[in-house]
Picture 1 (cartoon, helix red, strand yellow):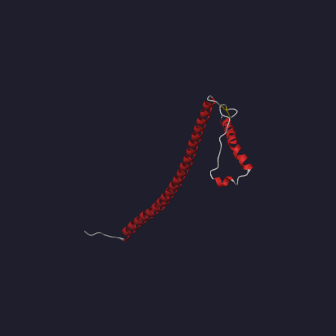
Picture 2 (cartoon, one colour; picture 1 turned 30 degrees about the vertical axis):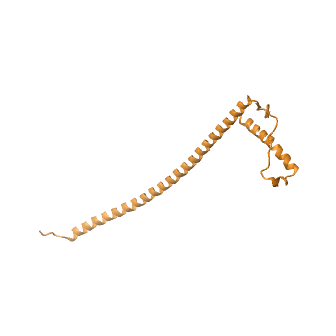
Picture 3 (cartoon, rainbow, N blue to C red; picture 1 turned 90 degrees about the horizontal axis):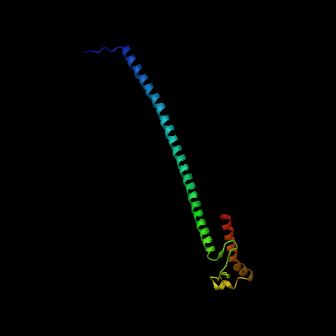
Length: 142
């Protein structure tokens, strides 16, 4: 069998092939930037999700920490109120049964010689001042 190949047939086929090639290049030019834009958007989305998760974990830690602090304060106030019935005057901060404060001794005896009378007086007032500060904080919590 002999096929007749004419210039017109060749021209038609080449025209269809160039159209298909142009369509293929146009599709490639449209699809590649689309995939690139989608990957950039996914990267941005993952960074936003990561930031949101870290902010959420920080907020969660803050809430848990606040709840722990509130629980501790509640425990302290309950202990203070129960000890009030055992002889501690909560409002005045005085012990009804005991009137002496604990004595503090320095850890290093050589340094005891270097401490002057003013520092000793401040150290003697320290337990009383600490007790007053604790009472003040307790009143603020209640």
